[in-house]
Image (cartoon, rainbow, N blue to C red; front, top):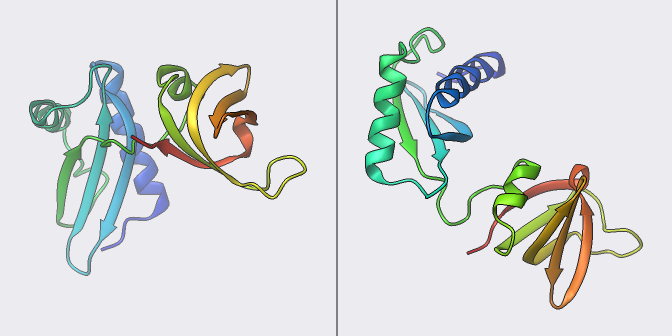
Amino acid sequence: MFLNKENIEKVTSFIKSICLNSKYELIDVEHLGGSNKSNIVIFIDKEDGVTLDDCVDFNQLINESGGLDDYIDSSYTLEVSSPGPKRPLKNLSDYIRFEGKKARIKLSAPYEDSSKKVFVGTIEGVMGSKISINDSGKIFDICFDDILKANLDL
């Protein structure tokens, strides 16, 4: 069974509400649908990283809050996971948190007057809605709205 976009948004909203009252941050919700069973993967993070015990703890928080049965009308497997070393960067606050770390940023269109769309380098800082990245010794100031996809590149 494939979950529709509306139900995925409801699951995401439900998980975000759990995060508000916990030490965890929601990174992403993925749905991997099969013909008979859905696999829901919840990616969480926290300030000092996620352990296996944190994944178990968060799974218990979901169950104590009523689970996902109100949003999924078929059989499913729930997996709670760390985002890993290639953690996605989705918000400006992510770039602030990971300043000084190596990242890979892909733009939706070429940067200014060049053909460059992919940057790999150190996050130097955030100023307003611009992210500074040092790619091969050159600083590029990238508008957050121009980023198609970004992740840590550890």
